[in-house]
Image 1 (cartoon, each protein chain N blue to C red):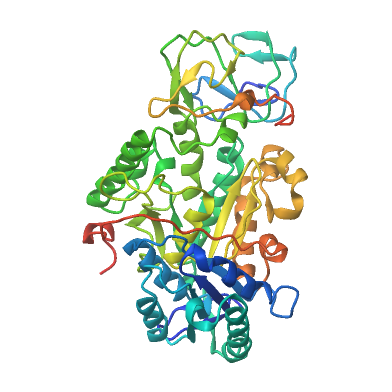
Image 2: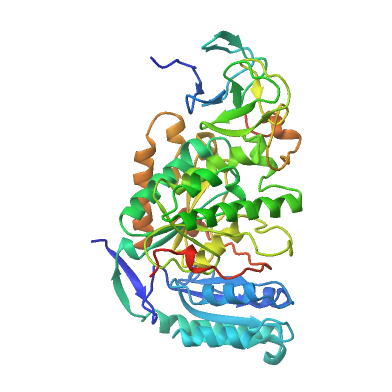
Length: 107
Length: 404
């Protein structure tokens, strides 16, 4: 039986991140396989959260493929993005709205 | 059998549009050329006269070849070149190439035509006469197996790789199965996908060539200091170039990869082709493609009759010469920009439709647009165009193993 991640999608069984299918609010409860967590910030559509605890230096897997490396320990349910992962190739260029939450963008 | 009635050109290729292009050969002639095109806005010839051009005053073999390929594209029926007079672009060579293709061609040199007003008048007069002439051009039934379709993604976000790109990939699978030639590109956005992509090549040698093309892109972008990644990609949930790449890669679908081409190379037959858009040799002239339309223009130079453009953040562009079908991956963006979008792949995210259903819709729309239906960007008048400096080495025989 497939686990129900609510508004989050698991794209490949190998993945350690989940993708938001819709905007999720701060405080929303998500039931992960390891138990329930509460979102500590809003997660905009198509952003990622950790499926379980991820160690610093571990590869981040999405579509079953590596999309970068954790630059710090990431807790289950935490936002996984430019602030805690890096490219194994070229650095990511971003502006202040990279969190997807700043005024006038995304949500 | 499809009901596509193509415009039959002297070289045997068929077009889905019959456009007269006005091409400026240096930025100094841009305004005059644009004014000529403007004379046909809000007339019965709206959309039939389109502006393209090259801004630089220094010669460039890539730009010269691109201009020839674009001006002899099957969607083009006639060409008016607008030259200032002293620029380095070889206008005689360009005009001879168009003339040899059997198309009406005229070159107006502003410095010898009496200036701005006189050149606009002379250009407008020639176009009026020539539009009537090319409208009589021969038509012929055209099959899906004669179509060349490009795909590009722009304004990508985290939805692109889940909905829009897989749906475009499904449409590509359907079109390739029907014998069409499909082109995907932007090797700078395939970084991280080189190994899985190489396994799909029809020969091991081609697999190595595909891998090397991505490695070249990686070196090129590393020198420039930025990946092919815009700030809006991060706001939309993409964290790294390899995450963006994996999302972009799926728009190639599941067909075997039949070859690697460079801008201006025409796919020799149906199948799936990767276009290598990163220049060869030392890093020169800046970023390979400074914005999405540069990639669209390169696929048109390789004969693309239309382009599938997958967007998440919401691009509104179209293109000169070949129509653009916009596939919106993000349901919120679709609602915000519905008037600019042809397909709502956001339905996949919201669970209303499946990837195969949207893929079929895209395939059917491709055939309808080939048969004359206007895309949203065409209706809105979008005719973006950009051509800049590059340099390439020609492709070798191992790039097109099935061509013989």
